[in-house]
Each structure stands twice: as C-alpha cells, then as structure tokens.
Image (tube, rainbow, N blue to C red):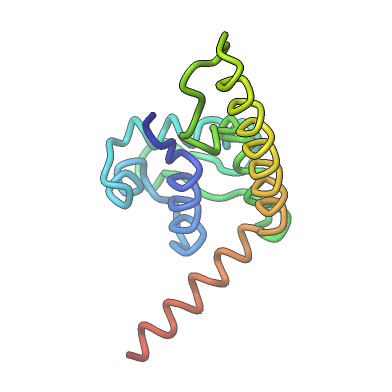
Length: 145
C-alpha cells in the first residue's frame, strides 16, 4: 500500500505560505513539493472551502493563509484533507475463515485503533503556529551557522 502524503504536503505548503509575506502561486508551491501545480490546487481546494486559505487569480495573485495559525491544529488539517489512513499495514485477509487468522486480525484491529486514536489526539495538540515557530527557530539556527 502506498503511503498517503497529503497531510505532510499540505502542512509543507502552509508553512511556506505563512512565511512568504505574499501570495504564492500554485506553480511556486508545486516547486516546493516537486510536484505538479494541479496537485497543489487539489490539495488546497478543500482548505479554501473551510476558510483556511484563499486564492486570488491574475497578476500578483496566488494562495494565502486566511486562518489564525494559533487556532488551527494539525488535527483540523488532517480532517480537512479527508482523514487519510494512518497506517499502510493491514490484514492479509479481511474476512478470514481460519480461526488463527481471526485471532490475529482481532489483535491487530485493537492495536491499530489504539495507535490511530493516540496519533489523532496528538495532532490536536499541535497548532500551525507551533509548526511555524519550530521552523523559525530552525531557520535562525541555520542562519547563524
């Protein structure tokens, strides 16, 4: 199963937008992700509908953050991108007849549910402002080196 990188990608471009001081085009944001501008527009469309970002067409236009970074958590963004599957692991057989495999699936289901719940809870503890502050700290350290 392929890893779903939508959350990571959206957070990446949101931080670039937060620190740019000006709107960024889909092409500019796509360059940060080494992808196509269409991918960026698809990623950000749902966030625009929720009021986290906005886009302006034409010369001088582009994408901008419209939300308060202190009020939006990683959980909010996770929800906005469609709650991608947390784990790429899964069952060998979804509805097994084998009693051994049924026991294995039940144990894994419980572990997956617990781990996913903990991760999603932790996403709710981190705001976009926290990410932005961490980036700024890292940038200051690198600039001094």
